[in-house]
Structures are given as C-alpha cells and as structure tokens.
Image (cartoon, rainbow over all chains, first blue to last red; front, side):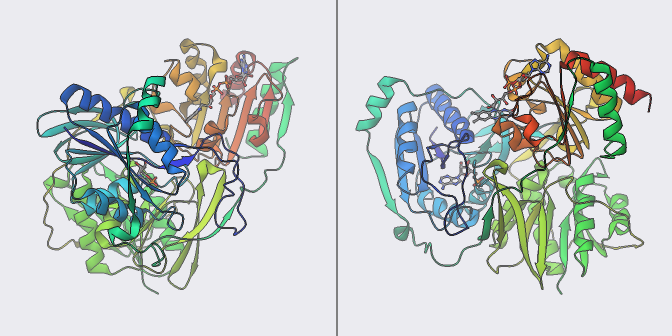
Length: 259
Length: 317
Ligand SMILES: Cc1cc2nc3c(=O)[nH]c(=O)nc-3n(C[C@H](O)[C@H](O)[C@H](O)COP(=O)(O)OP(=O)(O)OC[C@H]3O[C@@H](n4cnc5c(N)ncnc54)[C@H](O)[C@@H]3O)c2cc1C
Ligand SMILES: Nc1ncnc2c1ncn2[C@@H]1O[C@H](COP(=O)(O)O)[C@@H](O)[C@H]1O
C-alpha cells in the first residue's frame, strides 16, 4: 500500500500575524514554519497503514525554501521519501494552481492512496485535496475521522453537521484528514538523525510545465488585520453572582437583542 | 448582468438553512438567480425555493443522488452550469458545500474562493472578503477574471429572507452518473442534538468547568436559550465531550448570533473558531483572561455561581 501525503508548510498556529509591505501577504520575519496541523493526521495515517500493510510513504510539498524544514520533520517521523517542488510564493492560496502542480508531480508515481489535510492552516481553504482528486480523476472522501483500508477498497467515516457519513470507495482514492482520525506521533531523536541522511528530491515548478506567473485563479487584492473591537461591557460577578447574571441577561435582551 | 447559480443542499427532502441564506444573498446581489438541487424525491423542496428568491430551479432527481457524493453532485451542478451559463456559482459553506465547491471548480477549470464573509460586486466581478490565518487576518480576493466565479459563503453570516416570488422548476438534462466514493449511511448524532455549525446560539464549556458531569450545567443554559453545546479543545482532549462539539482551529468554525464562552481562556486557536460570532459573552473568573478582549459582554466570576441564576433569569423572560 503506497501512500502519498501532500503537506503544506505553514506559520506556527501561535504566530502573531503582521501584514507585509505589499499589503497582500504577511510579514514573514520571525515566523516559525511547521507541518500544517491537519497534514500531521494525514502523515500519521499513512505511516500506520504502511506499517501494517507494507509499502512506502512519500511526502510531497510545493513551497519555498522554508518548506524543507517541515519536509525533514516528516522524514524524521518515518516517511520514506520526500519531494520538494520549489516555488509557491506567487501562488499562495491559489488552490487550483497548487492542485495542478501537485497533480503534475504525482501523476506518474505509484500510489494507492493520497492523503491531504482537511485544510491548510493559513490559507484556510480546504480545497486543494478535492481539486487534486478531480484532476487525477480519483474518488475522494473529505473530512475523514475514521478509516479502514482493505484490499482494493476503503471505508471512511466523515464528519458532517449533526452526524457522520460512512463512505465506501475503491482504491486508488484521495482522503482529506480531520482531527480524531489518529494521534500524530512526534519525531524521536533517532528519527531526526536518520532524516538528515535521507535525500530530498527537488523538483522545479517549470519542469512540470506550470507557469507560476501566468495569472492564476485566485488574486489577493488586499490583506488586513481584523477591525479592532470596541471594549466590551464587563460585569463584576465575584461578590453577587445572581445580580451579575440578572444584569447580563438584561443587557443581552435589551441592548444586544441577542435573546 | 449574468446570473448567479446557487447549489442547494437538502437532507431528507428538507432544504438546509445555510442554502436559503446563499439563495437570499444571490437575490440581494441583483440579476437573475437560479438554484440547483440534487437529490432523490426532492421535487417539493425545489418548488419552495422560489419563495427565497430563485427564478429558475434545476432539479437533479435520481435514486443515485439520495445520499451525497462529490462525484454525483458535481455532475449535477456542472450540467446545470452548462444549461444556465451563470457568471457566479454560490455554495453554502457547510461540510457538503465546502467539499463540493472545489471539486466542481476543478471540473470547470476555474478556481474557488472559500468561506466568504463579505461580497462586493463590480459588474459581474466579485471581490470576496474572507478570514485567513484562522481569523488573524482578512483577505479580499477575486478569481482572477475566470468564470464562473465559485464562492462558498460562511453559514449564518448572510441573512435568509423570504421574497414574493415563484420559481420555475426545470430538470437537469443528460445526467451521467458514475459514482465511485459512495455514502452508504448517514449516522445521526444521538438525540438529534443541534450541531454547533448550524446553531444560532452556542454555549461552550472549557477546562474551567472542571469535569464531564458539568456539561449538564452548560447544557441547561444552552437549552434555556434553544442553543447548542460547544467546547474548547481542552475539554475535548480531556475526554469530557466529543470532538464534534469542538470550536476552533481544529474544530468547527462558527458564526452564531450569540456565543457564550464559559471557563474558556480564549487561546488564539479557540478564537479562530468563534471570533466572527455576532455577540460574544465570556464568563470567567480570571479578569485577565484573553477571552475578555474580544467579548462584547463579560462576567468576571465563578461560572458555577453565575450560570444557575442566568438560567433562572432567562426562563423568567
Ligand atoms: C495546532 C493547535 C490547534 C488547536 N485547536 C484548538 C481548537 O480547535 N479549539 C480550542 O479550543 N483550542 C485549540 N487549541 C488549544 C488552545 O491552544 C488552548 O489550549 C485551549 O483552547 C484551552 O482551552 P480552555 O480555554 O478550555 O482551557 P484553559 O486555557 O485552561 O482555560 C480555562 C479557563 O477557565 C477559567 N476558569 C477556571 N475555573 C473557572 C470557574 N470556576 N469559573 C469561571 N472560569 C473558570 C480560567 O480562568 C481559564 O481562563 C489548539 C492548539 C494547537 C497547538
Ligand atoms: N503547497 C502545498 N504543498 C503540498 N500540499 C498542499 C499544499 N497546499 C495545500 N496542500 C494540501 O492540501 C490540503 C488543503 O489545503 P488548502 O486547500 O490550502 O486548505 C493541505 O492540508 C495539504 O494536504
């Protein structure tokens, strides 16, 4: 069972976001880049499947130089191969271009399963996986929290509002992975040392026949910080909780008209 | 002005509220509005969409569309696009809409913009405002001149309003359904609980509620308000409540009209899931808890002392 994991290198979720000089992207100084949290579930699932059933895990990322650190992290956790398609500065958030790049890099490889994250933290799109499935003409299941992979087919549980859908699909297939699927492992020291020696295959975007400056499918006009919120009304409830509760309910009813 | 086609989602023949919001928003944008409704036995649901602003309703009625599949539903939407030739295609940003929109877009060879919270229009071209970096920033973006412009709208941000109107129901022509990934079953959560992603009022509990048994207190407040129960990751990871209730970066992103956070500190990853709620209330005993920075109303106090009289006061309204 060969698995391909698509991994995005993203700013640490605790990062303070500042707007960059062009007003369209973030100021990247001081940002720590990590494996996008949902992609950790994708990698962990791929590792568990290959540990149980044999085969290899190949991690593919499309990104600037900073993506190599995240790729090494994946190797350290146990991935067998790593592919770094270098580029992506101009196409961040352009899900279709990203999917086209990934499709071109993946199409001639051997795989039974492609695993993505449910969404990339930062772009917050949740689109690349489904687009990649369409471009590669694969069935997919998104938002997967339960998975059984058998011989030539899989059964997945995916979260939907108020319940779970059980999906059956033949292989090869693509999944986008959600929290709840597994508990991602961290790299142990031994893995980190071994990862240093594993090669990373470098691919140039141009060699895939894709023009990054060719006018994409998602153009950012501006990026802004959220509007400052006016200070709220804070009620002291330490001494008389009942009075505070009554006042809060009154404000919600009469001022906010929320209840 | 070319029209907007809206994908409409139903479950058991009942149209989802978020889809009505998307139809209404398309109507408010002006110009012709059409809808596409895939399913099995959904004729009645289709006829009702005129009252929400759809002029033409494309119905893809087929036993194979009884359960959702991205492949089958994409076929229905793409066929309706061919018939209607819209300049934009709206989806409600539900689990289904967020899954289907990118698959449809890729099939049409266009991009997609997810999670719109604001729309401005210049002729046929939309500029879409959407949260990025988990709500730490907002981007305004467009589809680079490619059409149809595929856009999903965040639920509960755009209002659903009935209009005087009756739509014309048309069948989607020439469906060719070959579905590989098939939904076999929909397992509904126990007790038909209201899902946080759909609720208009949410009361959430965090580590401050101290134990699983105290979700009963959170639920008593949610019940009094007709709302749903949410949770922080700390409460979910402690095993006090299921992940389906988690709000935040690795949980659900919600925009209810009222969000009440009880015993939740307000970590950035929690705020990512709820900061666009219309009215935010915090109940926390620590006056310096970051949640108060984004709260419209707050009570500094012990939640075990504050919530019971709140429930009484609400019941007395
Ligand atoms: C990649 C990543 C993803 C994450 N995703 C999410 C996510 O989706 N959702 C999420 O919520 N978190 C998420 N987190 C975790 C987040 O960083 C916080 O750890 C978490 O939100 C804390 O939960 P909490 O506020 O319930 O607990 P705490 O931070 O421990 O806060 C408990 C609060 O309760 C108050 N309190 C205690 N007792 C009482 C009382 N009797 N009355 C009133 N108040 C009381 C305290 O003053 C405190 O403010 C994520 C973290 C990472 C790294
Ligand atoms: N640049 C990238 N390189 C590799 N995989 C990516 C990239 N961008 C997105 N993905 C994959 O697609 C998923 C969804 O990303 P997004 O659509 O940006 O939210 C991510 O969790 C990754 O699995």
